[in-house]
Image (cartoon, rainbow over all chains, first blue to last red; front, side):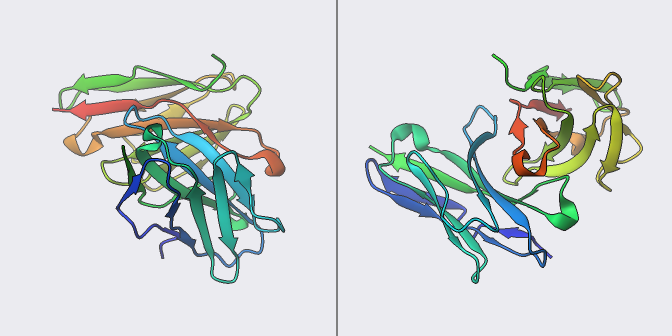
Length: 115
Length: 115
């Protein structure tokens, strides 16, 4: 069974607007971590934001915030005030107790920011 | 630059040849991971080391693949008798073993093309 699902292969957003990238996950472990990475065309995976399953508040890092809805098993990434440099692939990943030593990645969302 | 580095960045080889990739993790990180990423997909876990010990290998890691981390610092990934299906991006990541700080930081990747 797929652990991480990203249902948006591609998204467009106008520069300076906010955009939400969807991610749902599947685990029966009570303790897990959710991560978002950005992958520009150069190939490097850049860590953006982390949410722990026991965290009471949604994680925020600058223009990035994670909309964590535990009951729905979703961990959507919100990028505010989009910039042209935000154009990239975005991957959601999870690590759970049963698989602490590796991440499961979704298939990614290609974000294009239009000027 | 104290991030994860990988060498080479690109490798083109003929089918049947052997190739070796190197990864230098962040210096204080004792965990090192290898992932493979094909076009349009998220990274897939291959193997990981804690210090010099290889503790887990994916079924994706056939017997043509071998990874080492001899002194618990850099790691090498060797593919013997390459096949066209081995063409992919090979990503290395490192992290601390501390569960509360287990974010994986990725290198720029080695893009392998098998002709």
